[in-house]
Image (cartoon, rainbow, N blue to C red; front, side, top):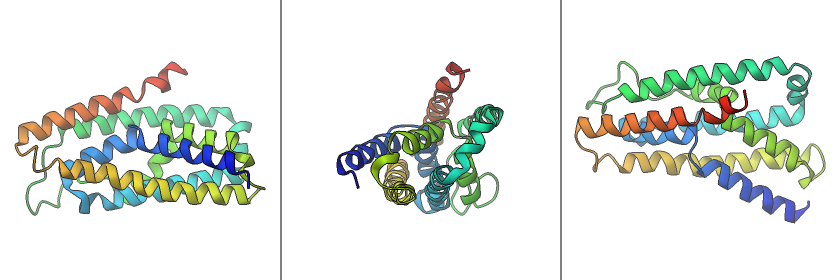
Length: 200
């Protein structure tokens, strides 16, 4: 293993996972609106979904996107459309009432896992991981290492963001404050689309 490159990859993953992006913004809002426990399926969906994406692209799926660039364009704009929908849903979300389980709730495991494939920031991380840090070890050991690091860093990052949102619940006690916070999160989520359209 090339240890210097491994440490550089570790720093890259920590920075990319912990900085604000669509996943972290949605976890923050979900933690506040629904609490940490109800956000757990969303957390697990992100962590496992993204790790699977790293492994799949690293083991050869990336060649499909190179052969058919139109697929990347389709995913990019599908992701942008879905983020706009999510931003609207977050902006309209108020605090969950005690015992309220019906209606729109936190993102499901499968919803979060599938979202990774249309997440623009996710693709930046995957492409950087597979290309810039491929030499950390021999193939396919390098992909295994990258997938495991993704699982570890992803778990810590998503839990921290969801807990942060949950910790705000005692502070943002009124429905008006929760709605204002969610509107701010929706605006930040829309702002994360800027790189998508700048690359167009």
